[in-house]
Image (cartoon, rainbow, N blue to C red):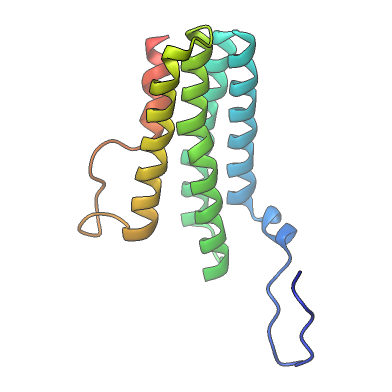
Length: 157
C-alpha cells in the first residue's frame, strides 16, 4: 500500500481509472474484449466465432494507435500508460489466444503444449525486446508484427 504524502508539493499520480477515459485506451480494451470472446469460443470449439473475435482484436489494435497519434493534448503519461496497456493486451491477443486456439483445435492433447508454449514465449520475447529497445534503426520492425499471427490464423481457418 502506498502511504499518503505529507508534502503538499509532491505530485500524486492520477488514478488508475482516469486512463480508462482515454479514447485510445478504450479502443485497446475493446480489442481485449474481442480477444476474451475468441478465447471463450476457442474453448467451446466454435471456430468461426473465434476468427471473428481475433480479426476484430486486430482491427481495434490498429485503431488505438491511429486514434492516439491523431489526438491532441495527450500527455507523456497518457502515451506511456497507453503503450504499456497495448503491450499487455498484445501478449494475450497475439500469444495466448493463438495458443489456446491451437490447444483447442488439437483437442487439448498434450502434444500441442509445446506449440502453445512456443507461441506464447515467442510473443513475450518479441514484445519484451521492442519494449526495451524500440524499433531497429529507429524506424522499422525486424520480422513480422505479432498481429500477423491472428491474420494468418484467420485466413488459414
